Amino acid sequence: MSRTFETLRVETPQEHTLLVTLHRPEAANAMNTQLGRDLLALFDSIAADPAGQRCVVLTGSGTRAFCAGGDLKERNGMTDRQWQDQHLIFERAIRALLACPVPLIAAVNGAAYAGGLEIALCADFIYAAASARFALTEVTLGIMPGAGGTQSLPRAVGARRAKEIMLTGAPFTVDQALEWGMVNRICPAETLLADTLATAARICANAPISVRQIKQSVNTGLNMDLASGMAFEIEAYNRMVPTADRREGILAFNEKRTPRFRGA
Image 1 (spheres, one colour):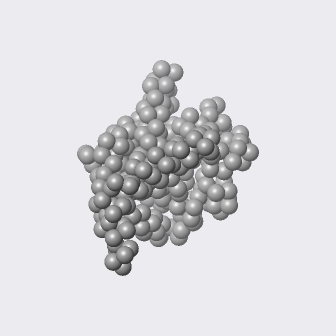
Image 2 (spheres, rainbow, N blue to C red):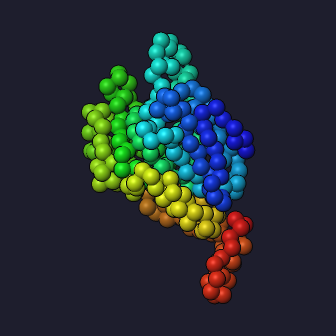
Image 3 (spheres, rainbow, N blue to C red):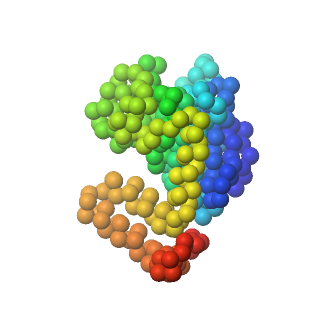
C-alpha cells in the first residue's frame, strides 16, 4: 500500500493500527478534489488488503478542525459539470470509507462541519475532543448533504433529530452529540489521540477475523429484517469455526495466558 499522499498523513503509531490524518491545515482540512482522490485511493487499498492492519484511526491536523467540509474556495466559479465531476470523486471516497473492512474510529479533534461530519459518520464510532463542534450546513448554501449525511445521521441520532439538524443547518455541541448517541466518548483535547489509539490497541489485540465478521454482520444486518439478519450472523459465525485463531483462543483460555491471534 502506498502511504505517500498529498493531503493525508499515514502512519503506524502502534502495531496493527493505521493512523490517517487529514492534512490541509491551511484550509481547516477542508475536502478538495485531491483529498477526495487520496481518501479513495487509500481506503480502496485497505479493502484490497484487510489483513494489512486491524484498525484505522482517522483524525485531522491541528486543533481547530477535523474537517470543515467541502473546500468552497476551490468550488468558487465551477461549472455545473465540474461540480458534479468533483462530487463523484467525493461520493466514491465516502463509499470507500464505509466499505472499510476493519474497524474505523474517528478522533474528531475540532470542527466537523458539512462533508467533514459526513466523513466522521463513516466511522464505526467517534471519539471527540471537548472543543469539537458539529453541523450539516449544506441547506444554508443552497445544496444538501450529498456524502451520506441524510442516511448516516438518522441512523446515529434518529430521524427526527437528524431532520432538525439538517433542515436548520445549526451547529451543535459535543455534549449534545454525546447525549444524542452520535459520539461515543468526549476526551480532553490533549489526550484525544492517545485515548483513541488505546481503544484501537484493544481492538487489535482481539482475533482479527472475528472483529471483521462482527463489523460486517452488524452493518449488513441493520439493512435486513431480524430473521434475515440472524441467518447472516450464523454465516459470519461459521466462517470462524475452522480458523486457527478460534483454536488458539480456546487453548489460551485453558492455559491461562494471553492468546496470540494471527488472523488465520
